[in-house]
Length: 166
Ligand SMILES: [Fe+2]
Ligand SMILES: [Fe+2]
Image 1 (cartoon, rainbow, N blue to C red):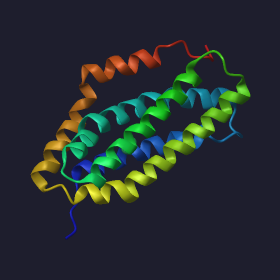
Image 2 (cartoon, rainbow, N blue to C red):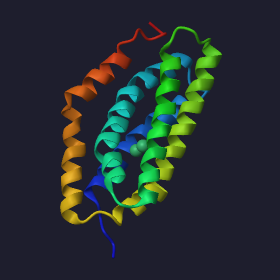
Image 3 (cartoon, protein in one colour):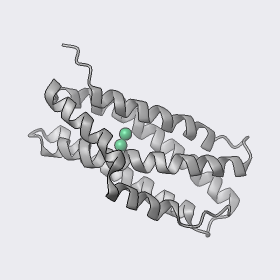
C-alpha cells in the first residue's frame, strides 16, 4: 500500500535545499570566494538537518525491533560524524586553497551519496515502520527541532569559528 509520509517529504525538501548548495560547492569553475560563501550558507542547513535527523529519525529507527533498521541508523550516524570531521578541517586555518577546494568536493560527494542512500534505501524501508499517527508525531518533532536550543548552540559553536576567508 502506498503511504505518503509527511516526515519523509519534509526531509526530502531539506535534502533538496542541501543539493542546491552542494552542486555549487564542488564546481571548481566557480571562484573560490563564491564557493566559500556557499559553504557558509550550506553549513547551518546541513548541521540543522543532520542533528534533527539524528534526534528524531535515527533515534526512532534505533528503538525499533528490526536489526536492518537499527543498522541503517548507526550507519547514517557514522556518515554524519565523518562529515562533521571534514567540516572541522575546512573551518581550520590549516588548509591551502587547493586543499580546501578538494575537501569541499569530497564533502559534497559524501553528503550527496548519503542523501541518495537515505532517499532510495533507508526511507522506503523506514516507511514500513510508520503508521499515520507515528508519522505525524515524528514530523512535528522533526520540524520543531528547528527551535531546539541544543541544536542552535551546536550550530553556533561551529559556525562562529572564524572562517578562513575573513
Ligand atoms: Fe542523514
Ligand atoms: Fe538526511
